[in-house]
Length: 418
Image (cartoon, rainbow, N blue to C red; front, top):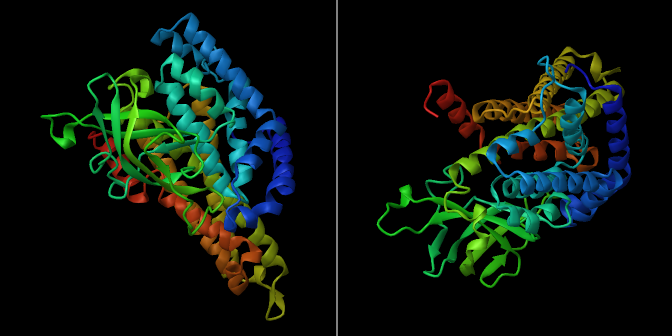
């Protein structure tokens, strides 16, 4: 895949029109005045039939699980290659359509994508990947259609990059088949408004060293006794994505809330596969940020006159614009590669996803910073929007694993130490 097809360009234009009419007028309220993003996202889903498609795909997968149930059968649900080894056009379209809204919305309001991705992709995706059939039926459909809001809770005050090693939250067996949960989580996307929470913690195993204890996950509902959800934080960027804390004090749960109803169901490996999905999506977000930054910079450079000529005539400005275009092309190529990989029924390795995220995050930060520089003093003002793009870009170097942790993941894989 080297370019968007005519059909994909048509869908992009339709989503861009929706963004201009339904999102752009509300950006200030979303970013600065605590307007929750979920009604706007639900309108997006309804307008483009994304909720109906998600429901249909869910029903199809559940029917397969009920009819077959074996691991071999589950593989059949993935997109497949044509018999001659090429990827089908339908599979490419399906993979591309999943990224186009991410790119288009990130051009203006990246936080909406963060909230949507965590609710649908991480929370709903985790349950679909590792939950029991009963758990999928009870929780996943509402998450995948955005009827309910999901949160994926792993980060703690003292466990950021060292998510597992420094984890303090615990699950203690109650002796009757259930568990008692304690701990706190922070920087949790959708935390203040989540209806369903995947809570990741350590199993409190007597006689086992803390670092060797199992990582387990539970599916929680808002309003459970002992579960407290904080108000939204005030952040540097992506204000349209509510972020908060979770506090658990002796929260009692039955075994049916244990992910996969197994203490081996969704531990380190499950969380790492979720990391890969999250990191790969960053390239699409970065592409939206870079495209919009370049557009705004080109328009301003052509019209801003200094010393009797537009600043676009100066080579230093031309160099900035040229580097922006190089980054845009590179990001687009990464997105196309990801689309083809997914369409072939494959997943990126953790190292591949980490490399993709590392480059994308750095490129987005560099381009948006240069966009502010092209605008000069005007770029520091909210009205020009490039300052918001710059602030939004910074989080790409932090969440889903910092740049430094991406380097570690890539190097470990190259050195065979993964």
